Image (cartoon, rainbow, N blue to C red; front, side):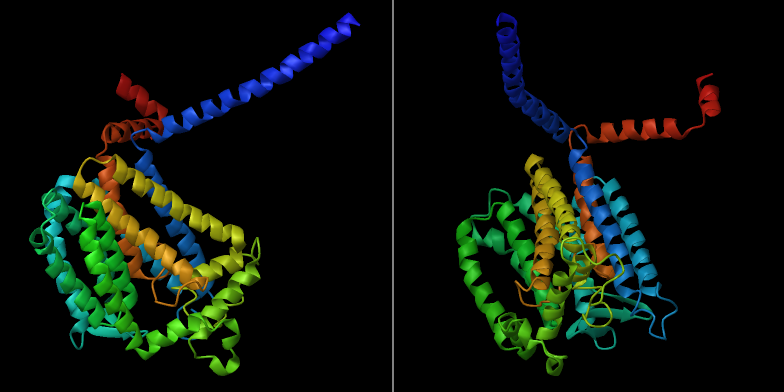
Length: 434
């Protein structure tokens, strides 16, 4: 009896020791995660890898969404639109890396020139012969074979410019005069030009970007309370005085049954077929390239409604991966802003956060019929040269800030040195050592 009882007690002690050691293991894992997050380059790689991953996902989905409709008898091949988007992505990544290599001090000096150039660019669509109307919005410029949307590039300039201005006015924003000059005239000029072209969606994103920047910069809440009512009244008037905008809002409450064959060109058609695509995908999707809605059933399948094709082909899990990448990017941006001591870095980073993550939330809300169709693309993923280049330029700003964090430049230098050593052939290393 004694040996058995002894073994039983040993077994109980072992099980008890295992249970008591679990909290210690979890604490060890938590400590390791905190140590990883505290590394100098954590924010840099969180922002960089999530952005590049979203660009890659976007290229794959643009190819899938356009491979059928691109070859309509006039295009060179089914890859025409994909190759064009790949060129835009390569241009944007190059510009991103150039901005990332600049110091925050140099970016500060570029804020006013960038803002002046941006105001000039958003005026161009209003000039006859240069401006072009696309989907009811005259916010496009076409000069020869080059076509673009200047307002997408203006978002970058507004984010940087607000960071510089609010940093200079830190501690003096209780005065309306300090807030009004030059912030209200400059932002008003940009918004007026965009609204004159009929692009309410981009205007709302610019307003969101500006409000978050002003809040981060320390503008008192009473000024927000004073501004929200006029903004709400203005947006409401823009909706009710525009038949197609009002129809889009009404379509939100009409339900999918309103999209019938008789309403093929109506406001419900796009939203309803976006929901059909998401519903068809299920958990794992119908398979990459196997979408049915992209066969001209879903308008703008490669642009504003590309998330519907993601949901159809890659399913709920694929949609969660895309949302997860945006969450990682947002986490990196917020963490960068919280750790920064420079007000310009904080304001600009949070403005980029409000733009990219806010626009992604609006786009997904539109596709899932939680919001009316307002025509904003999914950042990094939707087709469009101006949109992807603008987003990558914004990422370049934040990467520059992340490189300026304590210890980040030294860590990057060590990584470059180790990479060169790993890629150098052994016989060359021996010769250098000799």
